[in-house]
Amino acid sequence: EELAGAGASTSNNVGVDVESVTAVNIHNETFVERNFTDEEQKYCFAAADPQSSFAGTWSAKEAVFKSLGVKSRGAGAELRSIEIQRDTKGAPTVVLHGDAKTAAVSAGVKEVKVSISHNEFQAVAVAIAEK
Amino acid sequence: EELAGAGASTSNNVGVDVESVTAVNIHNETFVERNFTDEEQKYCFAAADPQSSFAGTWSAKEAVFKSLGVKSRGAGAELRSIEIQRDTKGAPTVVLHGDAKTAAVSAGVKEVKVSISHNEFQAVAVAIAEK
Amino acid sequence: EELAGAGASTSNNVGVDVESVTAVNIHNETFVERNFTDEEQKYCFAAADPQSSFAGTWSAKEAVFKSLGVKSRGAGAELRSIEIQRDTKGAPTVVLHGDAKTAAVSAGVKEVKVSISHNEFQAVAVAIAEK
Image 1 (cartoon, chains in turn yellow, cyan, blue):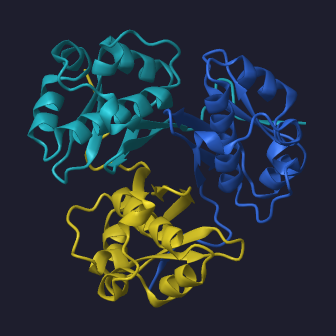
Image 2 (spheres, chains in turn purple, blue, green; image 1 turned 90 degrees about the vertical axis):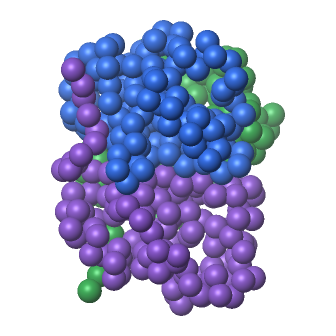
């Protein structure tokens, strides 16, 4: 009677996240340190608009997190373990460390793709976890 | 000469929807009853912010609807037949009933995944229909 | 130690784009001509809300562009070569021409799907390039 999208699915998963550009307090050093890797901080602070860049990177982390289908999230440790790198074309790529990597592997995720966009108000990211 | 994405495609389909959080009138009982299942109503009214929760659920229904590639839509019957449930991790899952299920089956859709996000202004959802 | 999403991936790619509805100046004839095909212009100017329709189409082009994983972009030529058509159900479909088509073929992309949504403020689009 039903066509379900739940359960121990073997198909790809999607994650979306929207953030107000102002939602990330980039002047809070403790917060930044807890959630962003050194490389991410370097990239975002060097960007034309650091505030938007941090919001976009944050949004990407959240979207990836959702795409992994993991339940709970630590206060920041897990977001730091989802690293958003930039390839030679400037496109965001996902590298998972620690708990995030373990969760992905145990869920059968082979690769996670993410895309980010922002305007002056909001950042949006979409991630796809491929199995 | 062209690389087309149209036609009777056998590949996965995507749907996106953005809604202002205030766009869903949750005080209109007839509207709520026509578009949301009993379980959805229970979940959204019990949420920390019912207005955002209804907007997010509405957005998910619309995104799923688009991902099915169906043409027309009834005044509400079809949105009610796209049910957004929450799994044990709180993640949204899709269960199709009635016409929506029939449409999905005839389009060769095996599973629909959806993700929802909202901030104080807007709700965004992305759905992927897998074939 | 890492689960990477980068490199010469054989898996599907995703692109997202968000635009303020007012970001596209539809009264600038040169701009419109440079970025939109004749069919797109006809469709958008005939829409109930041309401004939103152009913003949505623009957003779709950007999302598709990102999903192709191409590096640089010309001042408009390439956006014009990503054409957003509407099928008989009114759903957006992607047809690539020229450079965009060449890039897609060389990246192994078989098909690109896109979905568009807008409210009074913003347009959002998500594209998936399937390999």
